[in-house]
Length: 270
Image (cartoon, rainbow, N blue to C red; front, side):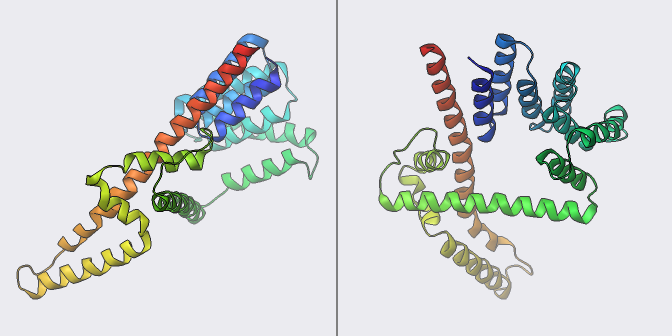
């Protein structure tokens, strides 16, 4: 296999969240082809994506191994800069101290207006954020996750309306998510969850009304002076959303497995 083929595999797997598999692909390429800056970069990125200290250390080793042989590779330099900008000054002073050296080297190699220069500006803007900017970013991330779950729910509701299992390309993430959800929601005992997903907006409105009415009725009846029992009406909605999240994880594993199977088939044919 060529370097480009290994890099394409890493990119495909990385895009669907297969970080461990992307690392394996990069390591296989390095073992077969020898040192390569692009594969070192993918190896580092797949470690950084795990967002753990041990993986950050492994990413740093990958970047340094690549830069030892290709000191002017902008992909490695910018990726390493992004890692160093994330480093805690107290816990990893050496890593944080490399920021200025990397910035200076990139400034020489990346002219203003280049993609690399834009990435550096983005990374520096992220590193300089204040508390309220962090809060806004976390809020935006939560909204994006919520929007993705809503979109997934709409796909599942459409599939439920059709009354049939989803048949699709095994590497189609959205179709795989809908198919996994249909499997997890199958059976007579899960009929209420299917109803909630098919009429998600109405289910939330109804739940809010029932929560208010239940709590008000219990307080007015004198049974309790303050009630939170009405929130029990949200249990079916929470269970339904839990199933959707479980389906997304299952679909991710299946898509990654399908990609790896295709990669293995191509390798065997070669």
